[in-house]
Every structure is written in C-alpha cells, then in structure tokens.
Image 1: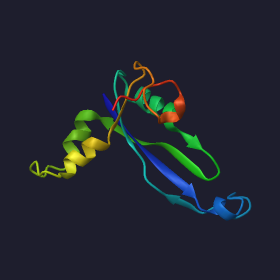
Image 2: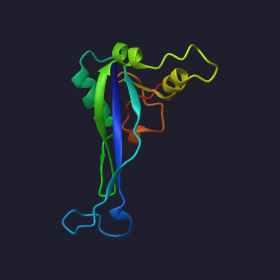
Image 3: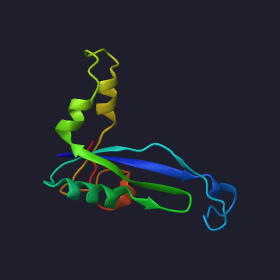
Image 4: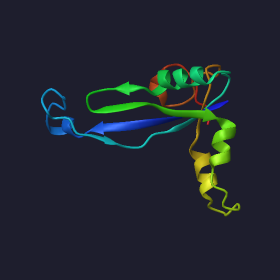
Length: 120
C-alpha cells in the first residue's frame, strides 16, 4: 500500500483576465491537496499513476497533480504522536485519507466519475 499526496494550484489571473502566461495574466497560488491511500497495487509508480488518472486536472484556472508518494509505513511513522488525545492531530490526519483501489467498484462522488474506487 502506498500514500500519494496531491497539490492543487489556482490561477487568480483567470478570474478576470485570460490567465495565460503569454498575456501576462497568470497569477498562480498554491492551494490545498489530498492524501490518498492506494490499495491493491504493488509498485509506487503504479500508485502515483493511478491517483493521477483519478484526480489530475490541467485547466487554465486550476490544476491538481500528484506531488509526493511514500509507503504507508513511512507515512505512518511521520504522523504526530500526541498521546491519544480525544481530538488528536494524528486522528485528524487519519480521518482525511481517501482510500482508493483499482479493484473496487466506483462508490464515491469524487474522482471525476472515472469508474474507479473510493472506499473511505
């Protein structure tokens, strides 16, 4: 299993102008992203490609793309250990992970309806 993180960026120049670099109307800002737990794939590069197929967007005003990947074990080792507090940071991170698999039927509203998974 692998963790794949995505990054989103928004082009503020596309709100009122063309947003194009050639016109000098580009103004990109980093926004959020998501964390995906990819199951049923054995290679990290396959996990990255699978998430890219699910979520990649490349529009004049918005882009989302895979930005980092790691094994589940590496990711879990980096989570904060806050002693199991009732509203722990660790629990929050765990609750935000989106579980995906190429072997599960489509069951979620995200991922552009590409007929792939979401089993949260």
